[in-house]
Length: 224
Image (cartoon, rainbow, N blue to C red; front, side):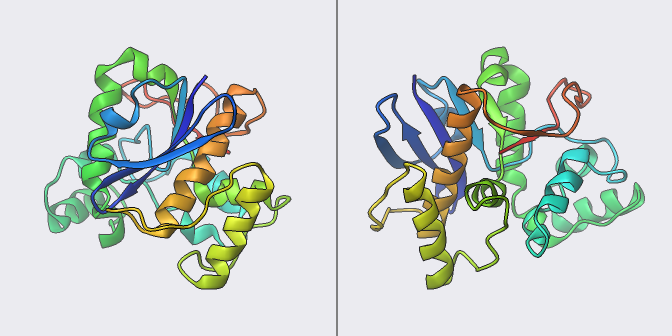
């Protein structure tokens, strides 16, 4: 059984695959469809399931923030579906604001990847069975005994702390350059790969109501 964790990066997606024997394969692919090939379970650090209005937001996001005091800002607010259809930040912000809440630039930069996943899952029943939404900082919180890792992952001490946590939970990686991705992207992919492994083992925790779906039947849950 092969599981994977996936995180967005500047050239596409970082994929951390874990075989049944625990060996890891880390690579960069251009499309999310490529990342899904040959997997039993995939956990991805990207929203799945979108509300029709910005308020109220997804329950799973509020629950995630509550579990990470001091790190709650790492859970970005997910755009509503009408905003996701917009092609400029000005349009998306206006559309979201009209429905109750504006949209920041940081979230807008994730729109292409959100749309890519959304289109794939809406068109494939098979992928809907294997793709789960996860969050790396929640994964690190769990690895850290329920305490959020407050150091910044792009700083040497933050990178080292997370790298050590992963190694302590069976995800060892010798840091080395990976074309098209930053080192912290790799850490995030590894973290949510552990979540994928926990899902296959029946040990993962779910945030948000089990049966909560958006208008296209996509789940609104975060796993860790």
